[in-house]
Image (tube, rainbow, N blue to C red):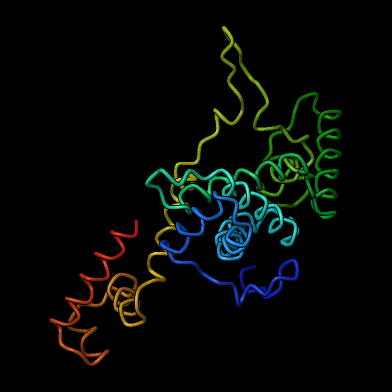
Length: 256
């Protein structure tokens, strides 16, 4: 998705990237009513919107629509940002953009099930009815799979596909005014907002390193090469590799 050049008529390959100091200066001017500064802030942070909508690229939604909604979240973040706080704009802006996109998806959600999946589901239901009529009991998933000659997983996916969707905000328990919703019972510890927000921040920090520093970190931490091996490949001393590596890690920590 991020390889797409045109989004809503915007050439994403030529988007400007603002430094933190530039962003802060423009934010102060925008707060004072400078419309030109506000426009520059929006244009200079569109890559932030691209980073966020990449997270939602597997939802089947039109990318241009998500980009427009993300821009609305960006504008709200710019208008509501408190310049008196010692906080990077991206730290405040990303959750605002995410919230706007989630609100859009929640209000415009539509479950899309392929025809092949629906056909499988109907065959499963027919097989289930035939089994009940013959044996006077519910068949197991394995028995239905054997009857149709398909995998057990296909039976489960097909039945799930034709169920009515349940909102994450559907209340399942309420006591003394405290309501527990479906989303309170669902947790994915590996793909939390905090983790992928940190991933975006790390990616931004690495992108500000020099090309040599990025190459050294890639060889050291992704290819598991020793400093000696890196020095031989790049053509510098092991001491230089060590110094560049330490400087790069120090810069990343500072950015984060």
